Image: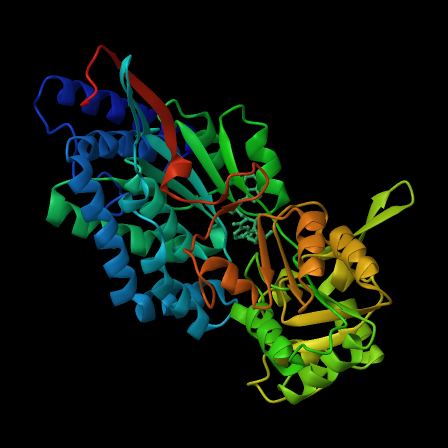
Length: 481
Ligand code: NAD
């Protein structure tokens, strides 16, 4: 059957269905609309958005209790299914580490829900005013392949807590596992609350379905989590977009005799090695100040990281970056996706090196303008750069971050150095003396989100990020005293 015939038939079916619904012949919100028979999983973005609109209306009738119940369902299902869903995501994407995929799903319980939304009330001689947070309606969400089910789950908790429904256009490389989780979420939400299609997804997402979602009148707001390409594309749609864009987080190790360099190495291996460096907040390049440079390298070796020779580093670089001719004498590096999130042992093998498969991190001594420093390479291979002073380290760290305003880390006991670097970096997340994950509540205080709206400035997303500010004023002498 040709594409044209398919779409003509779909139009006729949609028209007939809408007439039947209008006449009350069939229920306004069928439980399942997808050809696959799966809850919330649709062939195209417009049908998914229309179904989510109905999901939003159903949720609105359930009040705060309904939102809180959905949040509870998502959190408890992520905990209960962490192992199974972690495995299906790992099997589909083939990137990162299974144990860390499971850990990310277990972390969904720390995403903020309805409790975070508090109205702000004012009472005085002129009456009463309430500032409150209203839902947008339907949110179109674009998610990355690096954390498919965790980003979807975290988004749902934040967005539904704020009273919204959501339609996903996931990364094609993680769309199957996304559809499994979304189907299962909807199944339980329907059983517990009677709401259908609160969470929808496009079964086989494409750039066309992205465009369709962005253009849909049923979608009120976009939430974009991904690299520079998709952020750029979303900002051009004209629809309001919250953009959780790329990062390239540097870590500075200060020349500070009071530092425990073994702890520094452990923190960097944990944060930068988490899910084989797939985290957008993950340490991506290290700047060692003065004697801290060698002390950090020695500590890395003691803590199980493998230090590459220059020859080995070059051999890996040649394989993981393709240099493309941009024309006019310009060239740029493109990352070979085959090695994104690969194990350290796989990268080492490229250089003819056999290492223990349990090794979590490779370390390479490089200059500040090396491709491993410049590119957000998302591999468990961290370049370390020697710097003379703390000022130089911060300057190079800032340059390597490309003004993404994402994340940065420092290890120092010098408080004024902490402050100077925090001010200079101006990143959404800044961690002092801990792994990057501490900035999202893993090893540090605070809550987690898998969408950090760096580009548009909202930062770590919370339910409030997905609300419209609304004020209601009652003019009279109604204050209580
Ligand atoms: P990606 O940019 O390749 O894909 C992200 C999403 O955008 C996917 O759904 C993809 O299908 C879509 N997409 C990509 N290009 C598009 C285009 N031109 N038009 C429409 N849609 C497009 O990124 P990825 O490899 O899946 O994820 C890694 C990237 O995401 C890294 O840059 C990382 O820093 C970033 N990220 C950021 C955050 C954050 O919170 N700021 C969180 C996770 C990942």
